[in-house]
Image 1 (cartoon, helix red, strand yellow):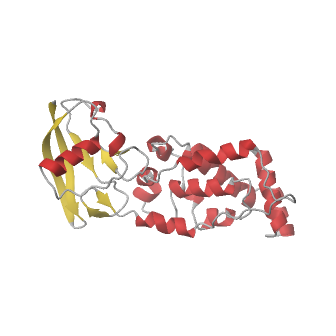
Image 2 (cartoon, helix red, strand yellow):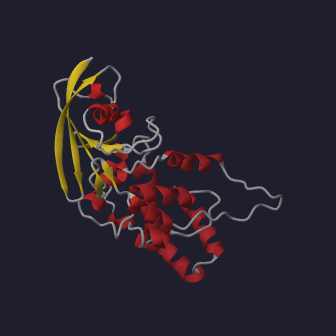
Image 3 (spheres, rainbow, N blue to C red):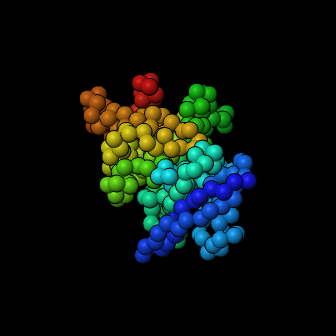
Length: 262
């Protein structure tokens, strides 16, 4: 056992400050363990959100020494023994109390997205598609909705454009639908106008903080931006849009055409 120093933000929407604690720690402890120790021994009123303590629920997102991380997956031995570890709430969303923020804005963005709309089954009642198409969207299903990517997104955090951009988490969800081999819904217009794909400037900060190591930028956001370009700025596609407009045949052919381009 050894004693380590911690500084934890406490407050409400009206304001708050950092409080210092000295905690006895043991080998293998993570930041969430320290929060629990503070609640148990020093301040039972400290508010913190957590659930699984296994890196799968995404609830314990905080900023540790200025970097967004999961409290349950951040070991104390990542920091120097003489270093004070500072724990703050994620910055992009409003404070509820102490380390707990209001992330309900994200749920509202999710509701806006057109749901999965599968094509009709083949004559024998089955769906058929290539394994590589399944593999492509499977990565996106690893998202645990910790919202760390939303927290570091410059568009949401620094420029406060929540009314124009849904953020990397929901660009990821849009990609999982748009790239699904059975989906027939056309969301390209919404991706451009409603969800703000053009706002992303490809800094890859969302990819850097993802605890599931999802390639958000390269495998989701950039392909969606390319599809918007294909739809709105490619001469062939502009002519095709005028001829077919928004028929089901057009949607199917566009998706097939885009797949050949990738």
